Image (cartoon, rainbow, N blue to C red; front, side):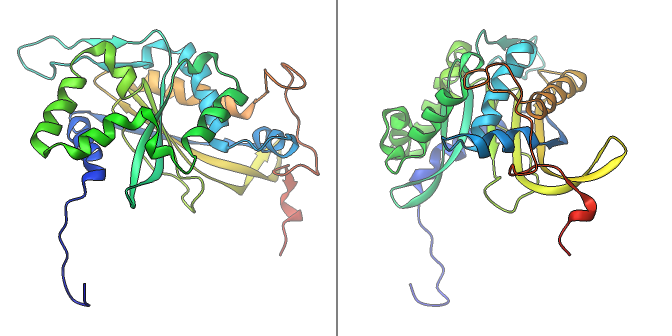
Length: 285
């Protein structure tokens, strides 16, 4: 293509995303956000022999919190909205996270949705094992994404019908869209963002950056993350969503690894730890 030419081409690898956005357009999202002091998480990460992704800590917390708030682990049942029907909510007995991944498919940058079932019972190491598998160089060829590959090969009208039919049974929603959506742009200079993942609750995490925090009457520098929560107001109300976000904040700020060394004990940051609190006056000038 020469300079000045306009190119138009079909992008079949993103067709599943377009079908999903058509489905998600029916949601009635409301957006909340808060700031999370990630001192204990970054301290644990710095001390661990294994390299843990920050999103794995977030997924661990999401599993714990949604397990305590089953009313938010839900989706609106198919067949509504309609002025002639009564809305019904499908609540799921287990937490399945849908993690958005940026992966190449046939040379095109594409969003793939990786599912992590039984999240309320997972350990940090188990979550990291799954995340590593999905982030591998051949992730797009995994059997979990076979349906996505098929959608890209179908004619658009048939693909749209197949996508809609797959979501018609409420019990299958967890196997396709998860019961809670999680997305992170923390690896980029993004402080906060909001997206809607097709579930009652979507969790969005920005980067961790040093910011001033008030503690015991003093201002210190601590690693802080902006955490967003989008909720479908047709399924849950603002008070419930605020409870979920507050519980997520508390769980991350009081992080302790229940599966590793020091079982059940919180890791306290020291001056040598990455992300440890520093007095404001100690900031480099």
